[in-house]
Length: 511
Image (cartoon, rainbow, N blue to C red):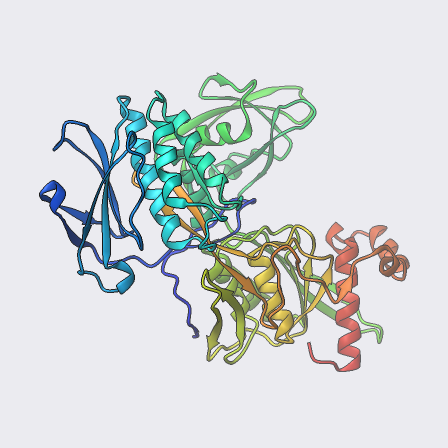
């Protein structure tokens, strides 16, 4: 239906709640570069480099071949450096290669992390948004960290050295996560998992694991598990002292297997045991409903309410489906709730924006490490609906939420209601490394279509959801709170949004 102009992302994944915007870098074709010092070839993998162990010399080492712009200055006691130039690559920037030998730890698991260190260093060297690397010698940082890692005996300690190295970049969003953490991360990005469909959380006062909800149609839902029940055992193991993430890991597993849980009733009167089959679970970031209300002239009107909690791969398609359904029920206006949405996928945010916009509008600008500003535009966009739209934001709306809010606001499509957004204007790449861990690297910043700075600034709404504004609507709010309508309709910011929609419709103003 529409495409993106100047938009170079191939694969994107979703972060957890505290993660910023993400993007996978475009891969390169594998290239062979001769390394005469070792009388063999070094294979450059798709990310541009490879680490491996070699034994051609008396001192074992980690060998790295990477495309760099200048030779490394080695610490004689720590590293032996052999340089070889080869004009064999597609770009002048890739014309010079270098091979470096470092001492390898006697601990095998530390040696694996040494490989990971070189991978991480190379990716950051090629893509990090700050080409000064926070005004430090990034090449020397590799050597220093490798030396510090050499005497260690555990992988955890070695990973600690990588994390310490990354912290010197002055960017908290450039970081590395373990293979186990990355698997959990991918569950959020793909929008699917294999499990039983339970949302659980630790009760702050007691630490007990309590069922928050069940995904509709999931094994847990079919078994009649209810909100508020306490999870006390999984496969015979008591859960005292186990946090919610560890318990969730135990509930997940391959489709076709099963897990047995014990649950204490909400009032604590009895405990029951339930055997749950594991199945494919779809996690939708969208919830929606229709809010009926009476207009000032006495007509019954309908407002479509859509809440987006994260920008996963399914966000745009799920939202399109929800909006189509509400259009079929004669909804006349919409509220898009991005409050406390921490962001996620770049492409998901832009795809959602295109559901509301027409034409060749600019959705966002990016600024790369060279300071070059580039627009990302729609191509022949066709909005699903042209009904009036209000977007709710607050201080928890970040990253992709701010891109979406900025795109809709600056293109004149939506009114923003709420509070100033978080101000996270960084774009990141995420790359799975050879050991299954993942490296997040900040590669660019973004501006709104009106070229407004977002990073550390945020977006200011058109209408603040403040006490003063709410006071003018107190009577209507109280009437709704005292009635049988859902609590959503008594949400003060939703009420302000409805008031804005009614005002603009009665004035005949464009949305």
